[in-house]
Structure formats: C-alpha cells, structure tokens
Length: 279
Image (cartoon, rainbow, N blue to C red):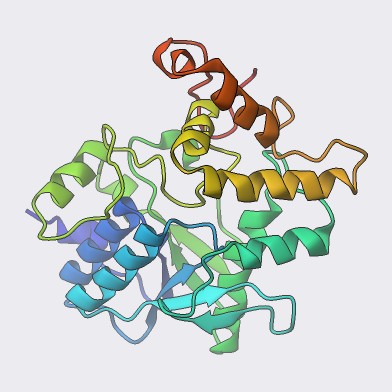
C-alpha cells in the first residue's frame, strides 16, 4: 500500500528529475498517485545525453503515454540558451550533445571532474526552469534508502533537494517487485535489481566488468567511448582517457584477446561502481 506521506509534493515549484530508469520511473509513479497526478507547478524533465540506450528512450515515452504525464525532454547545446527541447522522435541517439561538450571543453570528464553530469543534466535543467521564470524550486531525486553513500547535501543556490524514496525506505528489491507487477517494463536486463545498461551506456562510473561487458555485447556502443578517448589523446599527448586505470582501447583488446575466462573468474575484472575501481 502506498505511503502517501512520503510522496506528497512540497510547496512551491517542484522539478522531478527523471533519468529514464526503473527507480526514477517508480518515484514518478508514486508521486503522481499520492498527489492525484502532476500539478502545473511541477515539471518532470529528462536530460538526454545521447548515450542512453534506445530502450531507455522508449521506456520514458511509454511512462508518459501510459500514465498521462507530460515529460519535458531536454538536450544541452552550445548555443544560448544552451538547451533545447526535443522529443522521443528527435532526441539524439548518437551521443551528439555529449560529443559537442567534449569538443568544447577539449578534454574528457572523469571521476573527479564530472562536468558531463553538471552541464548535460544539472545546468541544462536549471536553464530550462529559469526560462520558465522560476527563481527557486525543489529538485526531486530518485536515490533509494539502500544508496546511503549517494545521499549528501545537494542544496544549491536556487533549489533544495528532496529524496522521497530514501525517506520512504525504498530499496532496490522494492523497485524490482513493483515492476514485476506492472503491465510494462524497461526492456533492459534487471540483474538483482540493477540495470547495468542504464543511464549513459559506457559511463566511467560503471565498473570495469560492466564496461567490458558493453564492449563484448554492444561493440558499436563501446566504440563511441573509444573514439572520444582517441580524439582527446590528440589534445593531451596520449593521456586522453575517462579512467586513469585503463583506456577503452585496452578494454577492447582484453575482451578480444583474453576470452570468456575474464568474465567467469572472480577478481579478474573490478566490479565496483561509482569510480571505486583501483586497478
């Protein structure tokens, strides 16, 4: 039974940050149920980087259609106002917003300098909301109770952060149980409540094991990340890489030459996410 108390919208303007995954979709559903829909003072937004899986984009549109919720699709652009409104049909699927940002910065983001998240998602959303005339708002983020390491002070100059899932005690398995009972789902693998293909397909915060799996199962998607490193190497005297421990070309070589044993042998590949691999 839904605990409405944890999902009632705070006063004032509210933005619901929808990443396109099962957790944020669950959060959106619960908030809509607890508030009798999404009121006009609330914006649901998805910031597309161009590196999301096509299944993610389809899932976002299906949530919107099935639940009758308007979702604003945004992308970063180099030209002012540095965002544009797109749609399921027009959203980039080849990494263009991310690639343009890398070319503008002339270096790659990494664990310690996550300007991709800041520009492509956080500031893109902020610029859109400011264009609506919003001065201050509540930013709703789908961090669960079992992700305590991700909970921290996120209040900024114009917004405060709200974590309804964490306050409601929602865990990964609660999310899995919910989607098992629904007539539709994100058509990407759910491995013990985790979707290894969620968000940016080859994000540098994903584990070495996950990135190797991407190279094996989706070589054409891995290739984009390798191309970005090759491009950045021309700017940084061969040091262009998303992670200092390994390059995407090295991961490609390892997958091609080491065989399946690296996936079957515990400890052969680091399995820690969030930039915790130490090599």
